[in-house]
Amino acid sequence: MSSAPIVVHRVAGAGGRRVTIRARIAGLAHSDADLVEFLRRAGLPDAWDALDDPRWVEWQGGRPHEYNADWP
Image (cartoon, rainbow, N blue to C red; front, side, top):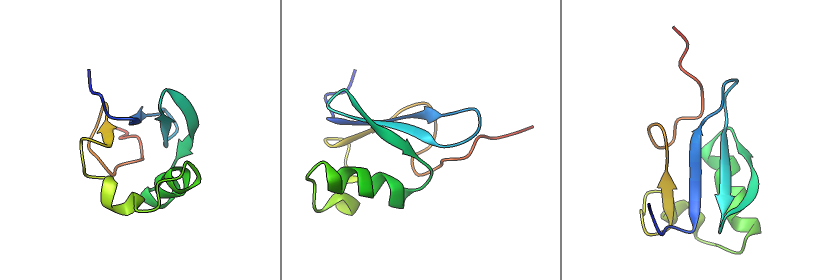
């Protein structure tokens, strides 16, 4: 289990990823821009720089920066 304060959960069935910040739901991100906005609202001004830093963000159940469900 990661100690990162931000968790980007696996892609939802219809697309988008739930984002939690310190175990509180921040919203459903459909892009990095959505994710950065959630982080900005939470008080992290340099959010773009944090997206690929595992000390800040844990990406679960899929590749980082992908928000759409893969359909067969």
